[in-house]
Image (tube, rainbow, N blue to C red):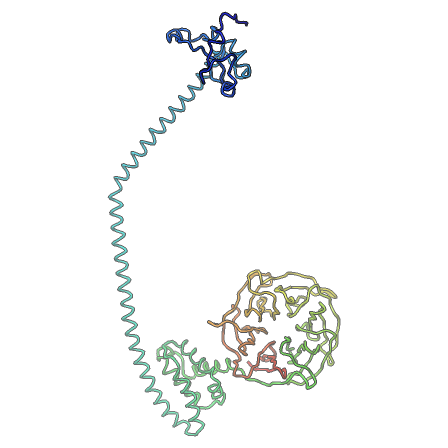
Length: 557
């Protein structure tokens, strides 16, 4: 639709409604960037407001009725405005009735949202009012509960205070009773010494009394028979008292019985005769202190000795002892009395050894990754070799076809099945997962229940695993003192035996890892014991190394 020139205002009468300058075109050059979004230029002449209201559906610039609505610019447009000023908004132009319908729907939607928001506000205010009323209602209950709890705490503290005061009073009374009992024991000691003079008036008897009573004077007074037996065990750990017990004299027996009767009240052992107590104590002493049967050297004068080289040892059922001499590349077979029966010189240095059957034993050769089967004959001879994937140190037999092997310079332990000329890996146990064993030479043994006990002398601990790889226990401390260089380990049907190089003694442990006692103390002339092995007739063989010689001691346990 074309508009006549008479209906448009002249260019000199038009002004920019933003900056006020007269315009000769749609916008002045200085305000082009501002005038761009503005879609109309209005006449600056005063217009009657009533006229504008009356003509609200007529475009003032073009004197035409509005026919469309621009949703982009949010303004009404006539046909001329649409074609000239809103030429870029063709996608946003809608008929007025359609635009009004859309706006009406939008307003209704906003109205619904406002009503919903209003109802939510009303509900929130009601909830706040309810909460306030509930708070006011429960305020008194809270204050009352607080007072009750405070009173209860005060009463509990007062009750605990009275209990502690009563314990202190009882301890004070017990201390007085203990002092009285100690005075009674001292009086009885004098009586015992007088009785001993009647039993044995010899010079030897007097010396024995002095030794025993000197140790007994350090014994704690106790009313518990178990504690008394522990004190007896402590007394027997002294070498001089042990020598006295070996004499089997009447003085020792009577002293032992009188010691128990004075340290322990009669009601504790009223059901036990003195002979029964005597037998128990004497068996305890004999069990704790094994007799050394013999001691013999394992090296000749022309052989070199190095205590830095660890070795392994095993005792056969007939009492013969097989020892691996890693420093001289030898296997040595000794009789049960310590005589050298046979030697076998190997090309490579041997280490671990275990019994395979009655006629053969197995030796590990870690530097060439082999294990060697040796015939137990006189002289010894090599049966055959088996090449292994890894270097193995110690070996122990599980059953007729399986071995447990410790790795060289790692923490792994392999369970393998022995075929004719090969090994099949069954399972690998890695104790270093728990941080217990890492990169050290380990001795290994098998308990009657099938658990693997590994000693780690570099990390000062022993660790136990099941054949299925399950963790059992770890021992790092004996009492409050750490293990000092655990080395050889072996078992019998009742206990685990462990050699401790740092303290030069043999420890006895239960199968749960609890210390049961010191089997062989340092006073028995042990010197850095290493490999140990259980022999027939309850004997235990222990290898010792010094700078000058290596030797084996055999004890009866």
